[in-house]
View 1 (cartoon, rainbow, N blue to C red):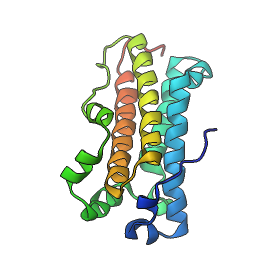
View 2: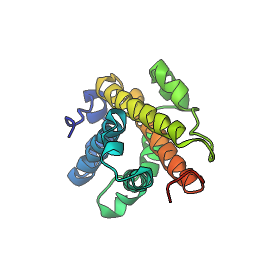
View 3: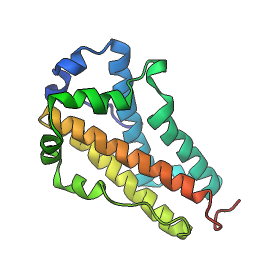
View 4: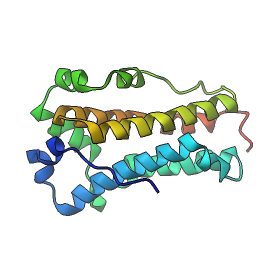
Amino acid sequence: MSERIELPAAFMDSEEFQALPEDQRLSFLRRLDNAKSLGLSLESGSRLANASDFADFTEDLELDASLLQELDSAAQGGLSRWLLHFSWSFETSPGEMLHALPAFCLGLLDTQEPRHDATLDSYRSWFHQVGVDLVRVTHAIESSNTYEATLALHIVVDVLLGRLLVACHKLRLNSAMPR
C-alpha cells in the first residue's frame, strides 16, 4: 500500500475543509489514497499481473473505479464529489483553478480513452498511462501551494477515474475480450 496522502495546509486550513465532520475528512483522504493506490497498481502492472485474465482485470478495475466515483457516497459517510465541485468552487473561479493546474494536467483533461474496437494491447498501454497520470496528479496534490490548485487537481483525479470507467464500459462491447 502507498503512503497516505498529505493534503497541503492551504487546503486543510480552508473554511470548507475545516467545516467537514471528521468522518467526511477521513473519507476525502481515503478516496485520494485509494486513487493513488489504484494508479500505482496500474502503473506497476501488478493489477493486471494478479488478474486471471484481461476480462477479470477490467471487471475488478470497473468495480474499484465505481467505488471511488459513486459508491463511497455521502450517504455512507463520504463526501459528495458533486458538492465538492459545486460549493467548494465558490471560493475560487474556473479561471483561477485552471491557471493553478500544473501544465501536464491540461493535456489530461482532453485525452480520450481508446476506441471501443481498439486492441487489448492498446487498452493495456492506456491503462498503464492512466496509472502513471493518477500517481502524478496525487503527488501534485500533495505539493500544491494553494486551495485553487488542490481543488482543481482533485477535479483532474475525477476526470481520470471517469475515463477509467468509460474505458471499462467500452471493453464490454469489444469483440477481442476473452469472454
